[in-house]
Amino acid sequence: MLNLLFIADVIGSPGREVVRSLLPDLRRRLGIHLVVCNGENSAGGFGLTRDAGHDLLAAGVDVLTGGNHLWDRKESLGYLAEEPRLVRPANLPPGVPGQGWGVFKAADGTPVGIVNLLGRVFMKEADCPFRAADRALEELKQRCKVVLFDFHAETTAEKIALAWHLDGRASAVIGTHTHVQTADERIFPGGTAFVCDAGMTGGFESVIGMDRHAALRRFLTLMPERLSPATGDPRLDGILIGVDPASGTARSIRRLEIRHQKVEAQGAARLLKGEEPATTVRYAARGEVAILREAGVVPLLALVSVGENPASQIYLKRKSEACAEVGIEVRRVALSEGVDTRTVVERVRGLGEDPEVHGILVQLPLAAPADARAVLEAIPPSKDVDGFHPVNVGRLSLGLPGFVPATPLGILELLRHYEVPLAGRHAVVLGRSDIVGRPLATLLSSRAVNMTVTLGHSASGPALTELARQADVLVAAIGKPETVTADWVKPGATVVDVGIHRVPAENRRGGTRLVGDVEAESVARVAGALTPVPGGVGPMTVAMLVSNTVRAAKQSAAARV
Ligand code: GUN
Image 1 (tube, rainbow, N blue to C red):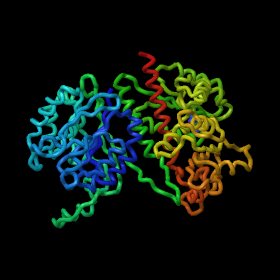
Image 2: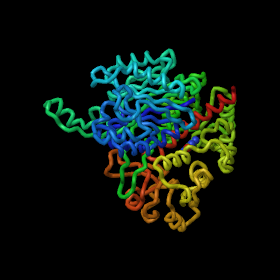
Image 3: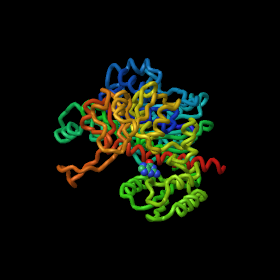
Image 4: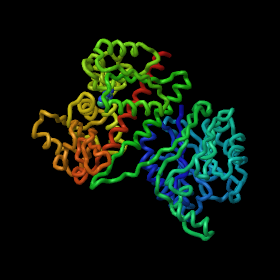
């Protein structure tokens, strides 16, 4: 399947920042082969300049499309003439610089035709978009099977009419211009994917991307006023289209809206929040679950617990909610405190033999007398989405594919998302637990990541602080509140806080507050970056569990074919 991502109208520098921050992860996670982006408002909210175009192309956009605002800046004309990756509306009179369509190579080598058209209803004059589309297709049919149209138009009727006109001849007709994403995505009977409007990429606390106060004043006073791009609530809107590259027929169309968390700082440290990369991971999982469900496979995760540990109850609730959100079914097996190891092992073996169950997670700790090791070893390695079975632990050490525990995997994803340099740098991991410290040290020192790793622990004694101070990336997974203080941290280091503890706090409502293994206040004065608690590693752990479960379901479905 050829995966095309269309990024909706980018509004000024806030929109470009969203693209820069989110696109690398989206490309990687969603397996995207070609990125098309409407950039006609990407320069200050009106028009497309060379600088704005370069910015988007450098961020990973493959093709830029335009619209009626392309000419808002004189310098755009020169850019239109010189940039081969820019497609301007095709239905304009002869003599307009630039190209109305082009053929671009996707990452898998498939040639993809991109056509840009302007609507005529409630818009400035333009030639007939329907006939221009026919001309474009006539020329493109010798060169590519896959053709995507960006139809920059005001009215739903004109957009839907064009989709019917092109049904069976175009792979996708994506509407742009209104900046409001419509929920009408569908595939027409002949195989053309369509949506009336892809939405916009920029500040949503706005009037269609522009400062809401100025826009409102213009309506209230009817006086002209300059509008500038809004910055509040930045989001990326887009459309993901799956196309059969051999026939050019669309197989899937999905809407995408991802909130961008502006990078905030605490003291000197950039705050590496987990929610944004976690959203991308969950979004990718949702798409894969939809494909599995269409093929008759309903991914199912069994969550097993023994006893009523209060923290475990919260984790289990979060895991269940995250699964439900992406379409994974959850089967809860809650055993009461006091059950013996054999009973738990038998229940887990039953789940292992059940073909409907794709993943099994045994929430730790188990209430006594149940023995965790024996229970974990009863999980078939192919369903061990927590990666705690000795087979998966061994596969990780050997660099072989297998399930990697969610927290280490989430930490790596988080560091990659924020482009923290890893290869050749020194990571110091504090804590040697089977769940975090040990697998993380293995992962970071693997050939795929290439860090130099030191694993410090409770028996390292006073040397621990000294070791920590050598770290470029310091991971605190010690399990003791606010242990890592500023004097443990090399100036500029990235600090990952895995701990989460509720501690007494006199001035807080409820008399408690959540802290990590790191004393955030002092460390933030020294570190270059820090994961917050809560909202750092936690959301990533849950997202990676979801991702592992989808993987287990896919592998099980593939094994059955
Ligand atoms: N208890 C604390 N963290 C975890 C985890 O990641 N997985 C399981 N199964 N139990 C836990």
